[in-house]
Image (cartoon, rainbow, N blue to C red; front, side, top):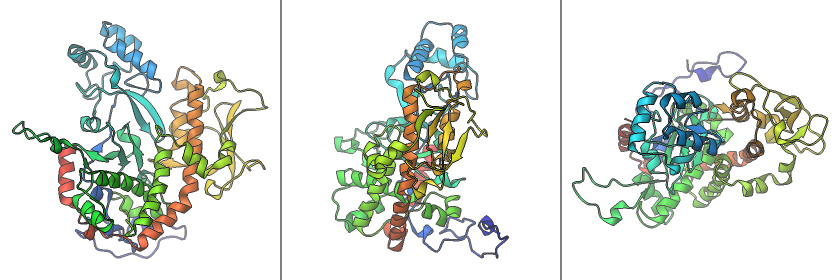
Length: 475
């Protein structure tokens, strides 16, 4: 019996009969009545994808850091005349032997090839809403898997980042990013679909491409572009502005649908075995309205984006009441007080004290029935963090707890948070509050699209070629 038969507390449910088939990808799950298998998947829509970067060299004191200056100084020392022994004393994590990494040999090779390059200090989304800096070196296995094809597609591009076969519901929720991202941005392993793809520049140098052949193309399956171009009166080919704009609009549309709680509930079992499949409405106006919702999600989940307009539109004055930094008993809070002493890392629960909201603290239904105070230490806390926000998960992680766990004092030489980091923490609270506020609108958009959508066979996505191309890329 399929696991979905055991969801309720009332005990086992009757057996459900279904027949796995080639059309359903031989999945051992009953097909949803609402058409999941008839809708295009992310991979059907966007043929090209790249896996996230997999440094596997440690997160603290290595090639990744929350502080750009600290990372810059470390990497300058790495390429300096310091002996390896001296470097090892200063930065033991950077010099620790790991699988496929012989630190002294790698350093010797990179120093012979050149020195420190400032432009390789790049923004890097490590976990949901958690941005760091990385020294993005693509040679000599300084990173376990640098994913050079991802780096080659960064300039002016963006990525729909998701995961196939989500183990947890929150892993089926995609993000839209314009930076490097980690393989474990989603716990199960993140994949990024670029909005635009660079063309091949010839085969083994056998011919010189024409200038027009070097223009990036929209990462759309040809059948999808042909069908929507005709239906929505668009112009040009995959290298044109219309196709590229449509691809980015589809990113936002997919994000909106995949973040709908109703969509997640309807297709929980299918999402555990495949990419999200999304119903694309035939009506262009419905599509555009949902794209606007996806634009909000894009701004909220990209820590390098400016979500101010979205917060102002959807939260308004309520934003001023959420995650307010306070001292027990009152008084001024200074930067030196911002020491994260409660343990949030791993299985630890930290300290979030439930309480009813004060009269001055509006509590929206999407945020839960109670609020609470989130403590950094026994004296300093963020007041009014509703339960729904505290418990919100993305990518398989509890977002606030994950962020705090990596910034505990005992992991950072007892250093307090900076005022900038405190702003980051509060921004996460506000972003999650806004995401939850969007949920009824996302559900409505999903239900409307599911009622009248394009079936996959009419979009004529060439899944065979896409799968073959991606198999070659990942190999």
